[in-house]
Amino acid sequence: MRALLTSLIDIFFPLFRRVFSLQTYRYMVCGGFNTLTGLLVYYVSFYQLFSQKLVDLGFFAFKPHMAALFLSSAWSFSLGFVLNKYVVFTASYLRGRVQLFRYLLTFLANLVLNYFLLKVFVEMAGWHPLFSQVLTIFIVVSISYLLQRHFTFRGPGSHKTAK
Image 1: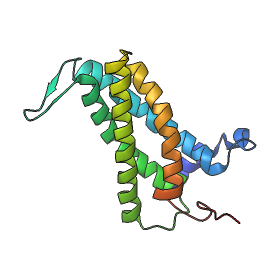
Image 2 (image 1 turned 180 degrees about the horizontal axis):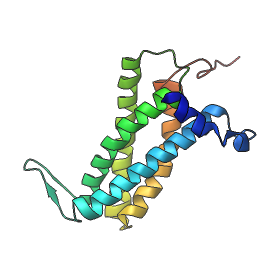
Image 3 (image 1 turned 180 degrees about the vertical axis):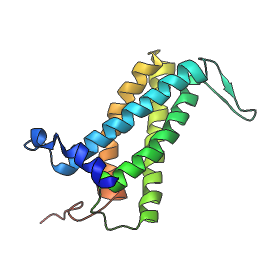
Protein backbone atom coordinates (compact mmCIF):
# COMPACT_ATOMS: atom_id res chain seq x y z
CA MET A 1 0.00 0.00 0.00
CA ARG A 2 2.83 2.40 0.90
CA ALA A 3 4.61 1.72 -2.39
CA LEU A 4 1.42 2.34 -4.38
CA LEU A 5 0.68 5.58 -2.54
CA THR A 6 4.27 6.79 -2.90
CA SER A 7 4.35 6.00 -6.62
CA LEU A 8 1.06 7.86 -7.15
CA ILE A 9 2.36 10.90 -5.28
CA ASP A 10 5.69 10.82 -7.14
CA ILE A 11 4.08 10.88 -10.62
CA PHE A 12 4.18 14.67 -10.73
CA PHE A 13 7.50 15.10 -8.94
CA PRO A 14 9.48 15.63 -12.19
CA LEU A 15 7.52 18.86 -12.69
CA PHE A 16 8.78 20.17 -9.35
CA ARG A 17 12.25 18.59 -9.21
CA ARG A 18 14.07 21.88 -9.80
CA VAL A 19 12.15 23.67 -7.07
CA PHE A 20 11.75 21.10 -4.26
CA SER A 21 13.55 18.09 -2.88
CA LEU A 22 11.59 14.83 -3.04
CA GLN A 23 10.98 14.97 0.71
CA THR A 24 9.66 18.54 0.60
CA TYR A 25 7.46 17.68 -2.39
CA ARG A 26 6.00 14.64 -0.60
CA TYR A 27 5.44 16.72 2.53
CA MET A 28 3.56 19.30 0.50
CA VAL A 29 1.38 16.70 -1.23
CA CYS A 30 0.65 14.70 1.93
CA GLY A 31 0.25 17.82 4.02
CA GLY A 32 -1.99 19.38 1.40
CA PHE A 33 -4.20 16.30 1.34
CA ASN A 34 -4.29 16.15 5.13
CA THR A 35 -5.04 19.87 5.33
CA LEU A 36 -7.84 19.70 2.77
CA THR A 37 -9.50 16.72 4.43
CA GLY A 38 -9.05 18.39 7.84
CA LEU A 39 -10.62 21.55 6.47
CA LEU A 40 -13.50 19.49 5.10
CA VAL A 41 -14.02 17.91 8.54
CA TYR A 42 -13.88 21.42 10.06
CA TYR A 43 -16.43 22.74 7.57
CA VAL A 44 -18.86 19.83 7.95
CA SER A 45 -18.60 19.79 11.73
CA PHE A 46 -18.98 23.58 12.04
CA TYR A 47 -21.94 23.92 9.68
CA GLN A 48 -23.65 20.52 10.02
CA LEU A 49 -22.64 18.61 13.13
CA PHE A 50 -22.53 21.51 15.57
CA SER A 51 -24.98 23.65 13.57
CA GLN A 52 -23.15 26.80 14.60
CA LYS A 53 -24.36 26.36 18.21
CA LEU A 54 -22.58 26.13 21.53
CA VAL A 55 -21.34 22.59 22.24
CA ASP A 56 -21.92 21.85 25.93
CA LEU A 57 -20.14 18.78 27.29
CA GLY A 58 -21.47 19.32 30.81
CA PHE A 59 -18.10 20.21 32.30
CA PHE A 60 -17.08 22.61 29.54
CA ALA A 61 -18.81 24.41 26.69
CA PHE A 62 -17.13 25.01 23.34
CA LYS A 63 -18.02 27.63 20.80
CA PRO A 64 -18.78 25.87 17.51
CA HIS A 65 -15.58 26.99 15.75
CA MET A 66 -13.50 25.58 18.61
CA ALA A 67 -15.41 22.28 18.73
CA ALA A 68 -14.90 21.98 14.96
CA LEU A 69 -11.20 22.71 15.45
CA PHE A 70 -10.77 19.89 17.96
CA LEU A 71 -12.70 17.37 15.86
CA SER A 72 -10.78 18.21 12.69
CA SER A 73 -7.54 18.11 14.68
CA ALA A 74 -8.21 14.54 15.82
CA TRP A 75 -8.64 13.54 12.17
CA SER A 76 -5.55 15.44 11.05
CA PHE A 77 -3.40 14.00 13.83
CA SER A 78 -4.12 10.42 12.82
CA LEU A 79 -3.83 10.85 9.08
CA GLY A 80 -0.86 13.21 9.36
CA PHE A 81 1.23 10.85 11.47
CA VAL A 82 0.67 7.90 9.13
CA LEU A 83 1.49 9.92 6.00
CA ASN A 84 4.55 11.56 7.52
CA LYS A 85 5.94 8.31 8.95
CA TYR A 86 5.36 6.06 5.94
CA VAL A 87 5.53 8.44 2.96
CA VAL A 88 7.48 11.60 3.79
CA PHE A 89 10.11 10.93 6.45
CA THR A 90 10.94 7.30 5.69
CA ALA A 91 14.67 7.70 6.44
CA SER A 92 14.12 8.56 10.10
CA TYR A 93 16.25 6.50 12.44
CA LEU A 94 13.95 7.03 15.43
CA ARG A 95 11.71 4.26 16.76
CA GLY A 96 8.00 4.47 15.96
CA ARG A 97 6.90 5.14 19.53
CA VAL A 98 9.44 7.97 19.83
CA GLN A 99 8.16 9.43 16.58
CA LEU A 100 4.57 9.16 17.79
CA PHE A 101 5.40 10.86 21.09
CA ARG A 102 7.31 13.65 19.35
CA TYR A 103 4.56 13.98 16.77
CA LEU A 104 2.07 14.35 19.61
CA LEU A 105 4.21 17.08 21.19
CA THR A 106 4.55 19.05 17.95
CA PHE A 107 0.89 18.44 17.16
CA LEU A 108 -0.15 19.82 20.54
CA ALA A 109 2.10 22.86 20.07
CA ASN A 110 0.53 23.43 16.66
CA LEU A 111 -2.96 22.95 18.11
CA VAL A 112 -2.31 25.52 20.83
CA LEU A 113 -0.98 27.95 18.22
CA ASN A 114 -4.00 27.23 16.01
CA TYR A 115 -6.36 27.73 18.97
CA PHE A 116 -4.91 31.10 19.92
CA LEU A 117 -4.74 32.34 16.34
CA LEU A 118 -8.41 31.38 15.87
CA LYS A 119 -9.30 33.18 19.11
CA VAL A 120 -7.55 36.30 17.85
CA PHE A 121 -8.90 36.17 14.29
CA VAL A 122 -12.51 35.17 15.09
CA GLU A 123 -13.21 36.56 18.53
CA MET A 124 -11.01 39.65 18.60
CA ALA A 125 -10.76 40.67 14.94
CA GLY A 126 -14.26 39.47 14.07
CA TRP A 127 -13.20 37.56 10.95
CA HIS A 128 -15.20 34.66 9.51
CA PRO A 129 -14.24 31.31 11.15
CA LEU A 130 -13.56 29.45 7.89
CA PHE A 131 -11.37 32.25 6.49
CA SER A 132 -9.57 32.46 9.84
CA GLN A 133 -8.91 28.71 9.85
CA VAL A 134 -7.46 28.84 6.32
CA LEU A 135 -5.12 31.70 7.27
CA THR A 136 -4.14 29.90 10.46
CA ILE A 137 -3.35 26.74 8.49
CA PHE A 138 -0.75 28.56 6.38
CA ILE A 139 1.00 29.88 9.47
CA VAL A 140 0.93 26.58 11.37
CA VAL A 141 2.00 24.42 8.41
CA SER A 142 5.16 26.47 7.90
CA ILE A 143 6.19 25.95 11.51
CA SER A 144 5.09 22.32 11.46
CA TYR A 145 7.34 21.32 8.56
CA LEU A 146 10.42 22.52 10.38
CA LEU A 147 9.41 20.76 13.59
CA GLN A 148 8.60 17.49 11.78
CA ARG A 149 11.81 17.47 9.79
CA HIS A 150 14.24 18.44 12.53
CA PHE A 151 12.58 16.98 15.63
CA THR A 152 9.80 14.43 15.14
CA PHE A 153 11.17 12.41 12.22
CA ARG A 154 14.85 13.24 12.57
CA GLY A 155 16.92 11.36 10.05
CA PRO A 156 20.19 11.57 8.17
CA GLY A 157 20.85 15.16 7.14
CA SER A 158 17.96 16.59 9.17
CA HIS A 159 20.29 18.49 11.46
CA LYS A 160 23.50 19.89 10.10
CA THR A 161 26.27 21.23 12.26
CA ALA A 162 27.91 24.55 11.50
CA LYS A 163 31.52 24.43 10.38
